[in-house]
Length: 147
Image 1 (cartoon, helix red, strand yellow):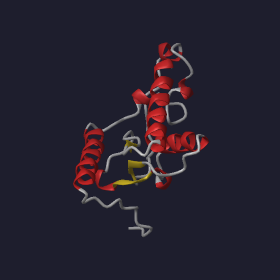
Image 2 (cartoon, helix red, strand yellow):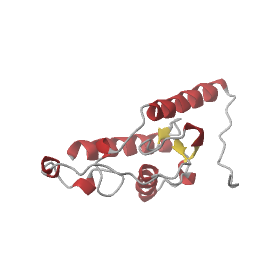
Image 3 (cartoon, helix red, strand yellow):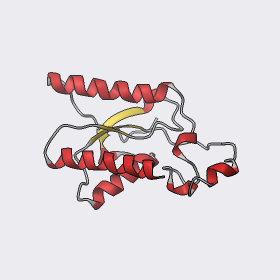
Image 4 (tube, one colour):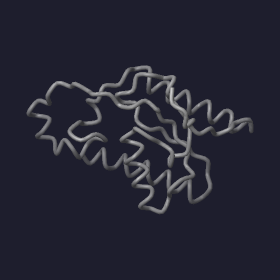
């Protein structure tokens, strides 16, 4: 539990520091329970939707006075229902399950992640950095149109 809180605090601290010092930074939302790489977007954290990790990060940043200005890779895919096996008793002995994950009742490490999705998020980040450094990048916001 302490490790999760420490890593969450570290990410928020880095994002806040970079934002306050006008240093370029980009973050990634959650890849868990996502399956469609065509639904990935890069946009301002204030525009993220359907992502519990992004929502949690956005709320914590807002409490620190940051409502926008941080680009993030996120998915427009709505999380589907996840049917996971019940946790063994020894997992409950490690701490409150609900305190360790972005979704109620699930530890982050047991949410299903298709192996290609974190890599795809990383490729989006690398692409963003390369094009930003080249001065050729345009930050796009998702379309309001529905398919």
